[in-house]
Image (cartoon, rainbow, N blue to C red):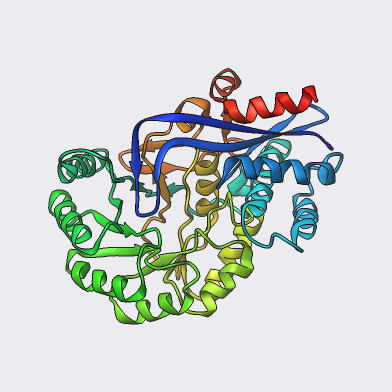
Length: 388
């Protein structure tokens, strides 16, 4: 069955409560989705992680090269897109556009073969996942510590056994908030910290030494993604496991990360690093280096479902009679684009996520709601272009 059409959509929502982290403040969530439709009407949905308008342009760049091709041959199409972009976009937003298309093709493949994506990836090895709650962003309130504590307690009451919080404002503030959160949630909840590459090596090691006593499960993106040497030195200088990789693209980027001994936990974003096709290769590479892999995921239910199917297929590392449940990121911050525009067959009860066994990713989009959330600036520019 051949591809008839590829339609990218940029959707946006102005947040009720703007939030910030070590790098930027978010007032609006903006995401690029893509719908691929076949000749018989079968369709699949994908999503790109990164600047939505740029990803949309990337999808439109790839579109003429794969329309009319067989959707079932997703690796053939992946190779076509990779080669078309290799000379000038071996990493970055064009690879996120490739990823969005690839995810949609896997959704279609599952529907055509009446199998879930996890099964098509090789089998559902992990039907139950214990995700960690991502939240605890900074907001401009009078008593931020109290707000963060209440949010952390909410996640604990919902059954989450792991929580990731933001750091990176300053070392003193980080230590203050980490101590407060650890005290609030107790010792039976895993706690991870994420600096979004806010620190130099010297600053990162200082923070590590001051928070090690709070039993931190991992320190995510402590230094610049360009600072491979800083990552390596930090791993050797702290007992806290180091995580990173959301700024890496394709297996080649993760090869650099792993060969340089930068991380204990590799974190590819499926909707940016090459889609499910490449994520499968990255997982094999991580296994060669005996590293854990926990995908980064920060989007709609399309991205989250893609991550769930991927984790559902991951091998045990290293494997034993009684393994801990695998984990993945579950963003809990405000996101109407996730909760209103998209829907999924995932079930999340008492902090546990069950991978759906419905064909494809088990996701869909409410087209009426999508129309309401279409990014007005992008839509206006398209209409202006059409008039010309």
